[in-house]
Image (cartoon, rainbow, N blue to C red; front, top):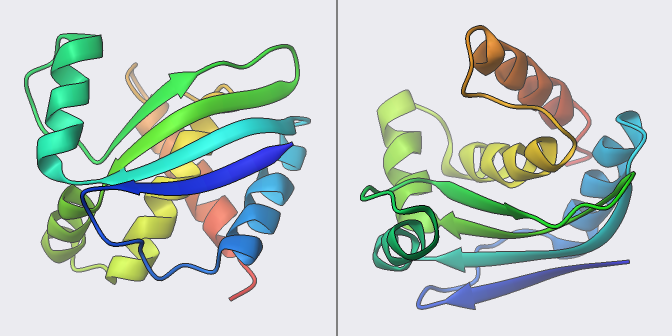
Length: 139
């Protein structure tokens, strides 16, 4: 069981990694999931665009790309998060950067837990799940 936090071309965001790890485990547990190997890679817009083009054939910026390696009830994956887009979105939504960053951090976990956001009505379900998860944060 390992959650790692890495950066590529950006500074590590000021998050409490041990608290964040405990929070992620607690959220996953509410979905009956155990946490396996999860890697967060915080990066720039340039990097996430490159990943999006290379692996998903999508030609646009995004806040997070989740690669799912789940097996059974054990969640695992690589989660690329563009801090540039997180910052832009926070400004756009009038949200605090820290809150938006944690929303994106947990968004990827919720995907791994089986919650989608592409189909009709799914975005609302995802948003409710994010808000519930954010409410479980200690800090």
